[in-house]
Length: 80
Image 1: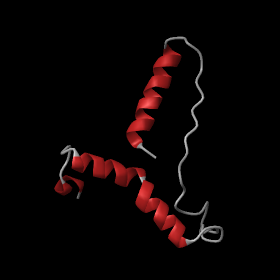
Image 2 (image 1 turned 120 degrees about the vertical axis):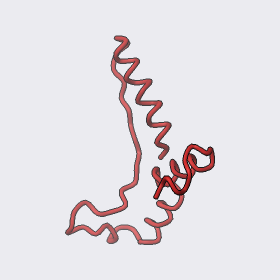
Image 3 (image 1 turned 135 degrees about the vertical axis):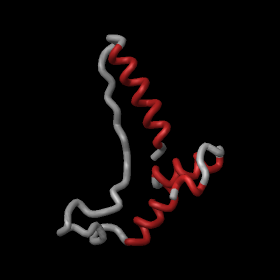
């Protein structure tokens, strides 16, 4: 789940289609941290530990934040 990769793939697909080269199908995979509704807390078919593990390793917002910090694109103060 990489925000910048999605942006680049979307840009490529849009340019391709706008150039009249035909359609492109994009399949995006993500992870839903919460249930579908208030009546579905989302923990009956997966554990809270699984949810936390996925979030800690591949949350797109956290990954983008870390990339921006490590590349000096923003400071921790700017994220507050």
